Image (cartoon, rainbow, N blue to C red; front, top):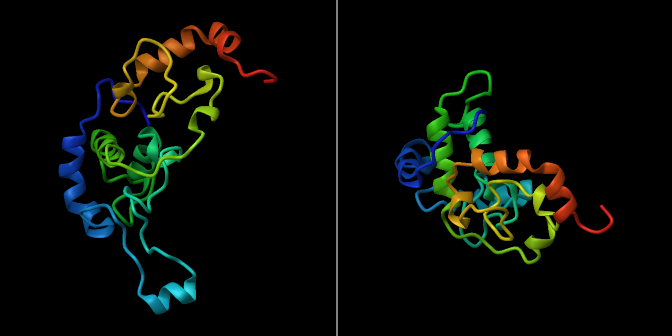
Length: 167
């Protein structure tokens, strides 16, 4: 999916989330648990996962990087949608992703070790260390194109400068 040229709006995403998404994932994003008998039979804690909060995926997970959930949302949401026939607009998918990722989630210790070579870090990763002159707040709603352009324009230098030993 083409990245938006402007920052996504979490407030707009909240309005979009309120209708189709909250019915399934709950207004507070806590997800939906199956009945206890069904949970035991299927060995599942959730029918629909929590999107934020204490039992959600941590801040190092793919869902915590807005570009990843935006692509998933556009291709699969609301329930019954398929990637060949998306229902949600690109703008709405990015808005919902920014809204979801603006909420707290568990902190994963050691995130900084995921990308010891900062040139390899994803533009939408919302945890430090950050690369370039972009404020940390830009990594959540974007725009991500300037970050990606800096990486592309300086790829060789960044790889030499920030490459982890032994890589």
